[in-house]
Image (cartoon, rainbow, N blue to C red):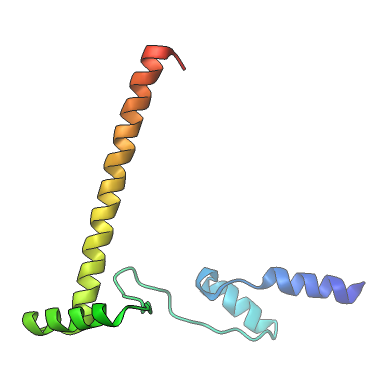
Length: 111
């Protein structure tokens, strides 16, 4: 029974490194626990994201990159950022239209 309680306490102490404060990490270290410490993620830093793309898409990225004089990864990143921004804006517009239609419906027919 004690072993189970000890295990439960240890499991409840575990957190993702990103969620752990420096004080929490130090407390665990002082208790003799192994603690891996990683620097906090900065908002302006970039992360690596792997994608599986068709060969034609890779060829197109290479051509665009060559014409622009930048690496293919920079072209891909810009296309993704622009596409995501446009899609989010489009979804916001659709949501606003739907909310407007819902308000008109509720005024006409009651809630």
